[in-house]
Image (cartoon, rainbow, N blue to C red; front, side):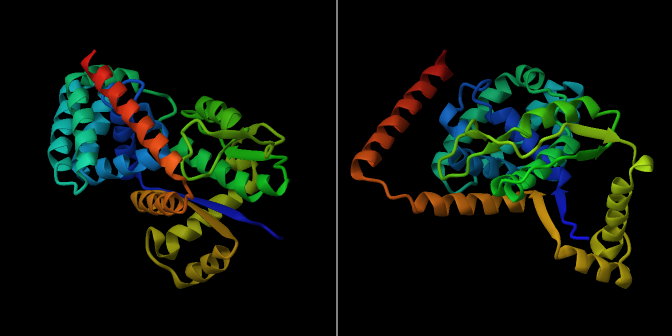
Length: 290
């Protein structure tokens, strides 16, 4: 059997921190954030990293509870603590942008909590998008196609999983140095709908459950077992890991910086870029005052 596996790793505290970042840095809701800083990955990710680095575990727990309960006062407390820690960041421009974004969020904490609530905010949905992203890269770019896609049935997230699948199965993010949040290309990686079924009736899902059981007992979760470690080591050669963590965020930033440094820009392009940035900054200032 020439099987291949995709293993997604989602660090749940980081997941909660990213939800906080999305709530604060959404330029459609927060006028202190420029659309260019929210929309361009090379500009958004460093701001996100600075915010996450300024959060402590208690902040993430408090925010997640405040988000679930629409507790604007608790959310405001987290905003204040994170704002004070952001001041330690070495990049003064990052400090300025985040300080102003957090200050506006403090003044409108209830509005942001209500506006950013979504049924798609679950690790299960993120894991699905990670898997599909890998399949786009491994299968889609080679001209292959997925003819059957089976997912464990989850009553709580079934509708959200179906809706997200129908969108992301058709779209692949364009990977370039200054790609925007809306830069996608239409792809045909999937020639099938998503199937939600019970593990008890699906040998494939039962196999996945067995592999996860082995992984937990190979030192990655419960108690390490040498025999399990040997089996997992052999499977690792057939596995692609897609990670959602702060460490992956830092790696993404490093890769983006290398791409930007490698751009061959003319003097005219640099001048035009500076003019555009100045115009976006004037617009941001105007929005903050309105």
